[in-house]
Amino acid sequence: MNTSRGLFWSGEALGERLPNLIDPYSEDLIDCAAYTLKIGHDVSPNTHSTDPQSVTVRRLADGEAFTIPPGQFAFLLTEEIVTVPPDAMAFISMKAKIKFRGLINVSGFHVDPGFTGRLIFSVFNAGPLTVHLRQGQPTFLIWYAGLDRTSSKIRKAPEQLGIPAEIITGVSGELQSFESLSSKIKDVEKSLMDRVHSVEREQTYYRVIGALALGVVLVVLASWFREPTTPRAAVQPVASATSMRP
Image (cartoon, rainbow, N blue to C red):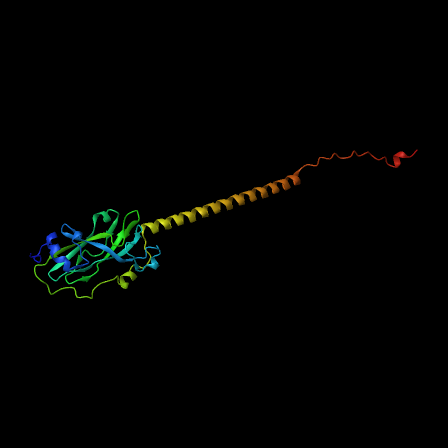
């Protein structure tokens, strides 16, 4: 069957050609005119930490689960080694049930003729909830389309088997995600409320001290201006010596 003349490969064509192009291959993973790829053993960032400075590659055990928090990026590596022959190119996406959780593919959507290796998916959790995934989970889709001829202009690069360090470095800065911004807003709000309560306590303290000081001043002033209450002693006239002579 001719699969190399400007047409997408059918499920039958995939069954004929993919055993030589995808490793490991399983006929059960053909989904209509696409083939389903699984999550491999390498993921990034380090999903045990939300610190953006700790972004690194994490090696998963078989079937090990991991999470992608809301607003976070991750690099996912396919389990399968994929080859695109020089008479075709491929298109990639994620399964709809994964995208419905809010996880979107923000990397490229095609694979060049001549590529060989594991595919790297750059994904972003745009949903409000943490996305739970596991190693070996069927997650990605790949479609093959034939070119109008076998091309000599193909991708010439070493086989890609892991996540390169340079792309990890590119996302190792601070991630201003919805979750981190919400956390920062809550921290600022708490700090502001603590400051307001502190100012209110200080004002209450100063009002009490001021009232006490004013009371003392009023008592002192009242004592200064109070009229004497003790009656004066009666003064008797003293007879002069002249008037007492015989």
